[in-house]
Image (cartoon, rainbow, N blue to C red; front, side, top):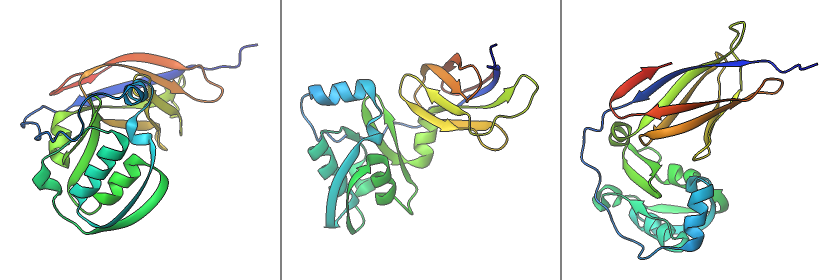
Length: 202
């Protein structure tokens, strides 16, 4: 007897309009690394564990260190990060946690786009990327709490909240495969087109 049930995915795709010019590029790395390219093909670089030790350096100098040591392409306006007096160290910590720590208390954010990590004003990032939000429910209309939401192409994911709602932000325009899983239910997948400057529901 098949005990699996059906999940219903209600999607609202939101993609803010790209209204501002992109940040300036600082070229910290020349050439390509095979290992780096293979990693980008399989994982989100922001989840990569790194180790670091910063003493009396600016945020810009900390980013330059990470760029050089781990062969990561960062895109940013150098003037934006020329501040701070960073004194932190850790090892085997995800890169996104390090960036959050470095940028804590500022209006600066970051996002992974086109095999680069863009660092810019949070509002500017929101204007350049889209998102997907929706609700996961059972066939009887009950919300599913903590259902796993995953974008197959880049391994971005989240879990639904107590109302079955979820939000995935900072996605570049394109077509994605959304996968929803929950114990005891059939896995559901759906193709989602993310556009700039439009809102879609399905």
